[in-house]
Length: 612
Ligand code: C2E
Ligand code: MG
Ligand code: MG
Image 1 (cartoon, rainbow, N blue to C red):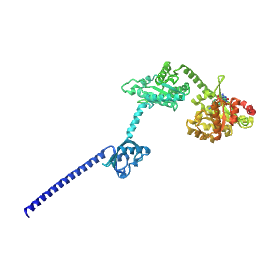
Image 2: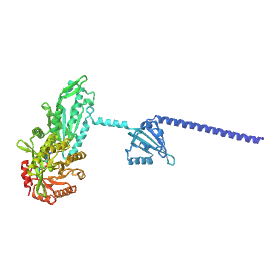
Image 3: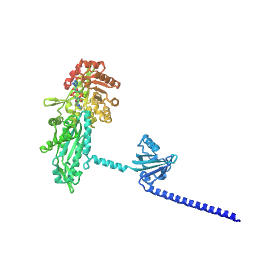
């Protein structure tokens, strides 16, 4: 080997060595970085295992690559079962396509979406979660992965509800508190302005409640308040609201003296007349005067007697804003308490007078029902074609102190006091018997129309009462027609339709009274199993000149024919009205022109004579 070649060889070796060194270093570096990556991944994995948020990673096709243990725990879906599937396996069906379209839009444009979403867990339970999704892209902008993170919102939602409960409900009695009460009162003002009705505000305060607390202690006092709240809530109508103003002691436990803890307020919605509050007020005083039973630490204490006073103000008569309405009710409450309490007072003197009259009327009505002091008058119905009377309507009369009270004045009272139930049953039985008595005089069974009141119609015993009346009188059921009004039906249409069918099954006919004054919904009318429409007097009054009334009358006659219903025009007082109706083929008419309501004894003559 010459020197030159050995030199070249050495250089080559050195280069090789350097390359090997370099490569070794490179490899070492790579191993190190690999180790680092592994350490990194381990770290990431450790974090993923521990975070409380659920994490889902999917590929570009949105197929699941990985879910963390928090995900498994929250949803019940296990990694090995969801791998390769789409996250939509947990869709709840609570969100429409629009929701998901917005989500994908955001992911497409902003690479990010965040929001509340309801999903399903493995056992089918639906729960709310707060979720954020990121779309990861490569340099060219192609999707590589989606990473979603979320946590369960159930707890948070529950505590929001709890917060709302605390905000709007009194913690001791669970009645609405002052804020909800004010909200509701404002709302009722608006409804009442629209519907031209009134709103009653009753402030109820227990008399000498401080003494009760001093004698028995606060725990007993609190139990009494809870019981009072329950009694109040069950005494008012479903649509009314009972609220309580909590005492300062409850709001701030450091205050030992009780201030105003026995103040309750009742909102009476949809009052037709101020005096209607009388019935509720007397009922409230009556329920609170019943003895209470409570539990002391050691023993049961029976027969604690409470007494309450009530101040009443009426919107809009007494005031048109909340604060004034409350203030005047407070004034009325002071008057109620002035002579020892235990009574109620209106703010207006005239209302107090009317209310006293109202109370007298109520007790008289109660007695009249007990003593059966009512009579029935009958108003025949004319068949326009034959000019003969074929049926009659029973109209109740109450002779009271030398005059006769109109049903328009006492039927609403009978409803509020529930006296309508025995009263209505009596009308049913008596009128069916009277119709049969008349049949023996005129040789044929006349049709008999009987008015039902709203409460009577809703009352479960109605079907039985009708059945008894039919059976006792032995009247052919098809001769009996029950009159109901649209507003009675519209309150709960489905229940009303059921009742109507049950009545039709007894074989009786049904008529809609005062047709045209209520909702007159044609789509419903089609579903009602009724036989007759009685066109209200209001449309007949100005015939034949009132052009609008004439048009409505004609339309109803045509409509009735189309639906194969009978039509009766009410309140016919003139020949012109009768001619107008006859020309338009109105089948039946009723009114003072043809016959005024009269006692049964007058009916044979009227039926024999007919109308010429
Ligand atoms: P309604 O069923 O629409 O009865 C028609 C009312 O109009 C009756 O008044 C009748 O006397 C009156 N009337 C009849 N023809 C004419 C007329 O040509 N001109 C005028 N101005 N009035 C006429 P009434 O007897 O005072 O009854 C009023 C309402 O009281 C009845 O209206 C009905 O809704 C209700 N009612 C009457 N009797 C009973 C009953 O036994 N039970 C129930 N629940 N309600 C009844
Ligand atoms: Mg009627
Ligand atoms: Mg009528």
